[in-house]
Length: 407
Image (cartoon, rainbow, N blue to C red; front, side):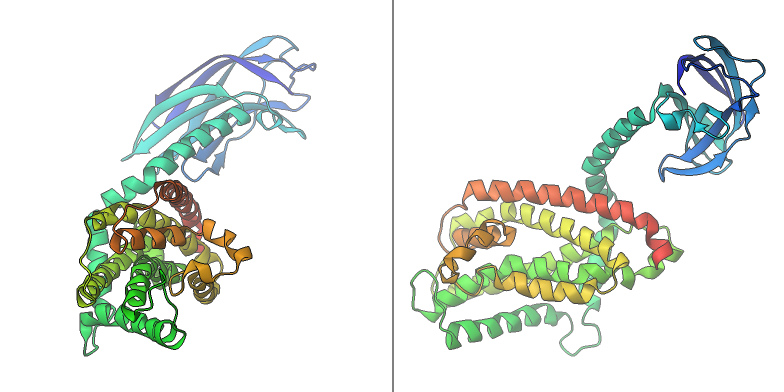
C-alpha cells in the first residue's frame, strides 16, 4: 500500500479547505472502488496531538492503475473554534486502513483559526516518520525556550504569589513573618546541639565549637532553600486544584513559586550566617561574591526537580509523604552536619553523584575558606542542573494536560 505525491495545493474558502493533489499509485494493485479504495481526511489538534474529526470516505471516481497517477480533490471543513489544526489527507482501503499508517507519504495541511478566521500556515507531503522527526525538533525547541519564556512572562504573578506565600504562611501567629527567621534558626540550633555539642563533630581539624557552627551553617544555606521547595512540590498542584479546574492559569509557576520562596528563606539564613561570622571573630572574604554564581545551578536544579515532583505528585498522591523520607535520607548522605572524612570509604562515591554536596563544598569555600569554588565540579553540576531544569519542565508541561481529569 504505497502512494507518492507529485503535487499538493490548498486554499481556503471561508472555513473550508479546498485541496487538489496529484497522487501516484506505487503499489502492485490497482486502486478501485470495488476493492474498497477511497479518499479520506483526518483533523488533529496540533498542540494536543489528538484526533478531532474524520471525514466520510469518498470513493474513487475511476480506477487508478498501478504505476499511474490520478488527480484528487478534497473539501475539508475546519473546526469553528480557535486552535491550531493539522489535516491529514490520504487514500485508504477497506479492511486494511489508511495508507499513511503503513508508512506511505500523505498530504499535510496546517491551519490556524483565530478569532473565527482561518489561515493556512503550511502544506507539505510527509510520512509519519518524517512528521515524528519534525515534532521531535519542535519539542526540543520548545523545551529550550518555554521554561524561560513562561517564567519571564509571569514574573509579576510569581513575585506577587511568593510575597503572599511568605506573609500568609504564618498569618495569625504571634511572631508572624518573623517565623521566616525563627524556623530555620531553631532547626540550625537543634542540629548544632546534637552534632556539635553532643556528638562533638568537628570540621577542618578545628576543635573550637564556633568553627563547627560556621561550617554547619554554610552547608545548611543551600539545603534550606532546596529542601523547602522539594518538600512542598509534590502537593503544590493538589493544594491549588481550583486553579486547574476553574481558571486559565499558568500552572508551571506553582513549583517556581516554591523555589523563590525558598530563596527568600535562604536570604535570611545568609544574614544569620554573616552575623555568626562576626560573633566568632571572622571577617567575610571577597570570595563571597561567588554566591550569585552558586545560586545559578542551585535554582536550576531545585526548579527542575520541583517541576518533576509536582507533576508526579498529581499521579501518585502518596508522594508527598514519601518525599519527606527521601529528603531526610538525602540530608544525611550529604556532609552538612559532619565532615566527609566521617563517611565510610566505600560510600564516598555517593558524594560525586550528589549535586548538593558540590554546592555545600562551594558555599564553604567562598564563605569560610576564602577561595574560589572548584570550577570543574561546579561546571558539571551546572550542566546537570540545566538538564534537570529543562527535562523537569518538559515533564510537567506534558502531564499538566491530564491534571483536570486527575483532580
